[in-house]
Image (cartoon, rainbow, N blue to C red; front, side, top):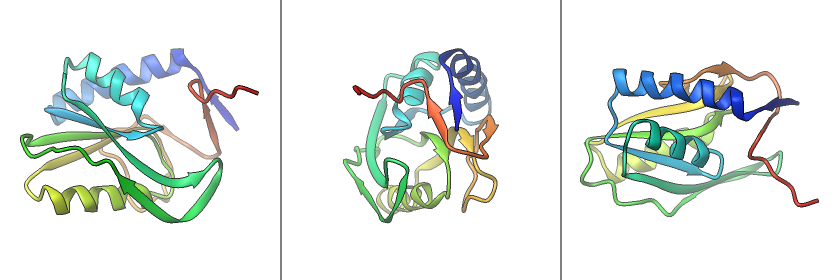
Amino acid sequence: MTYYDFSSFEHDGKILANRARDEFNPEAILGIARGGLTLAHFLANALDIRDCFSLNSIHYENTTKLDTIKIYNIPDLSKFKRVLITDDIIDSGESMVAIKKEINRLYPNLEIAVATIFYKPKALMLPNFTIKEADDWIEFFWDLSLE
């Protein structure tokens, strides 16, 4: 297991923000709950984007991958041309492929880019903007436990 601390996140988030602004210039940010919410908030602040949304996707229960992907609470993105979807990691890529497919079905003219901190190179899809390759489970600084 690899621990990812706030200092690394802040550094990497600035790189992602600059690249996303220069190469995509999003009008809105869509964070995947829960892993993509911290990055969505950070990028929205860094890029001065007020339209920051979230949707829910469940494909893991703790560290166990589930057989299905549930996507719900999709916001109204009809007034935007370019939306940046954020998540903490693209692991298998199955969730992000399903999310992009559903967003494209609902909003066929929307340009979508994906930003993640980590990715696994064998995933079904790779993010447009990313920083680090992952080779084991990542524990993020926001992964809190009350135990």
